[in-house]
Amino acid sequence: MKTWLRDSIVCLFLAQAAASAAAGDTVQQVLARMDKAASQFQSMTAQVTHVTHTEVLNDDSTPETGTVTMKMVQPGEVQAKLEFTSPDPRTITIEKRRVQEYLPKINTLQIFDLDKKGPQLDKFLMIGFGTSGTEIASNYEVTILAPQHLQLIPKSADVKHYMVKVELWIPEQGDPYPVREKITEPSGDYILWTYSDLKINPPLKPDALQLKPRPGVKTEYPGK
Image (tube, rainbow, N blue to C red):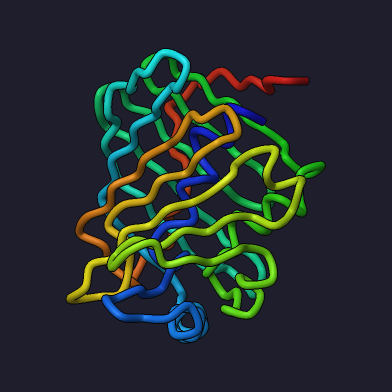
């Protein structure tokens, strides 16, 4: 579960999670913009950089760079794909409460079945993606820390086992979506995501979210 949280789902807060917090916005205005953005969301793509900070060592991991693609397949269900290209290639897909990670250097596919964590997974995936601002407010304490800086504190004790807060940075001009996101865990470790070239509702190819392992791939089920 720890690996899954660090390497996949947390990124899926992404652009729609905060909608907009331009200078002078109140929490109520932000939540209203969440409603509008969520109602219009169908898909997204972006360039992404991922860094993990380990608090006890005061150490940052080597930045990973790549792309993220997400699609609303039906109300209440999101499918996503993360494709890292540097420093080491790997691809992560999330579909129907299952996370798959493909490691091309060793031609290995790891599959994580998260069905037992369904309620938490649904909350992570759907925050801002078809979820109303009212629902967000029901599950999170929403605060504007400063212009362009929004904070979400989970109300659920179960969610707080995995993360204690999410911070998002929203530009004052242009599209109302975060350019940076920080997810802090109870240990003080955090994950920092930076987004660029964000596209909302772009046309996607039919296979845009599919894994494409090489022939002879080895399949593993960690945790089983």
